[in-house]
Length: 304
Ligand SMILES: CC[C@H](C(=O)O)C(=O)SCCNC(=O)CCNC(=O)[C@H](O)C(C)(C)COP(=O)(O)OP(=O)(O)OC[C@H]1O[C@@H](n2cnc3c(N)ncnc32)[C@H](O)[C@@H]1OP(=O)(O)O
Image (cartoon, rainbow, N blue to C red; front, side, top):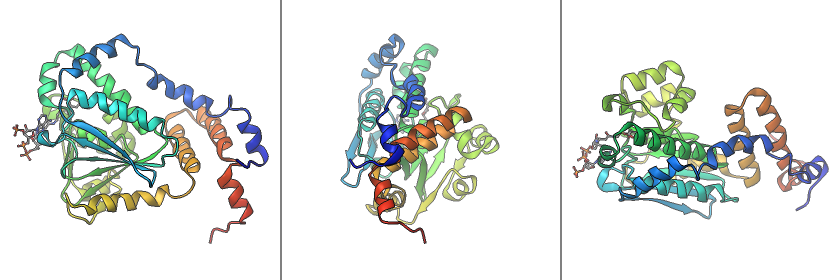
């Protein structure tokens, strides 16, 4: 790899690179030996059904499908475990740039499988399940991939929360997002409350949660929850093509640069200003003097 200037110097000192950011991220990534988590993993295995499909495409945009259509893509126990596996695969997919999360058969996801939930409705198991799903979705949002939730049909409860674990949300004209937790005697616990407040602000978050208000495309755009309304009809093959075209505007170019952009945005939004500034320097060092930078300099790139 041809490196120029300070990029070479910084990359020769990998100790510096991303130190702060990964230190922060490890808190969420390395909890596999937690005995509490092991107990809930064993319980999850008792509730099989459905799967989480992952297809890493040539375009370097991966497609993750929540696949349990007979239950409107509700999360069974085994699907919760599979979600973790898929996120782990994406964490090590070094050439990836983007991720689309969708549901199978024209609908997004109806939250946790109510049959499994009934069996683990005691507070201890509920907390363990919640911690597990919150960790995975935190890791999902922190992937160095630009992610979009493609919402067709319904995104309910935990399904609505999952849409907020992506950077963007696009939906078909007749799709609905609804945080139905209040109607279930709950609050979002998969990280959806904290993320929702950051996306739409405190007042809109209160309206969506306390009113269990249905979010259609118009309202979604108005409050900043929805980034694009797709023109293709729900369930049609073109929906995915349209979503991929929308995402491609942001994922074209050098993969290391796109991944670095996602990393500076995540650290900027999650760390204190001081830590974020320090991390920004580390991340800057991973692209300065790299192939895309050197090529842009050599070509005397103009930005007309
Ligand atoms: C922190 C997250 C939180 C938690 O952990 O507890 C949650 O996510 S709570 C779960 C929130 N979701 C729900 O409460 C969904 C309840 N279901 C519905 O409202 C409807 O089923 C709906 C709107 C998703 C679809 O309605 P529609 O009339 O189009 O179809 P059906 O009702 O006939 O549904 C088809 C089939 O799917 C089963 N189904 C749907 N959602 C779930 C679910 N979350 N868990 C298990 N099964 C689900 C539904 O029972 C039907 O099955 P069938 O055998 O035909 O009765």
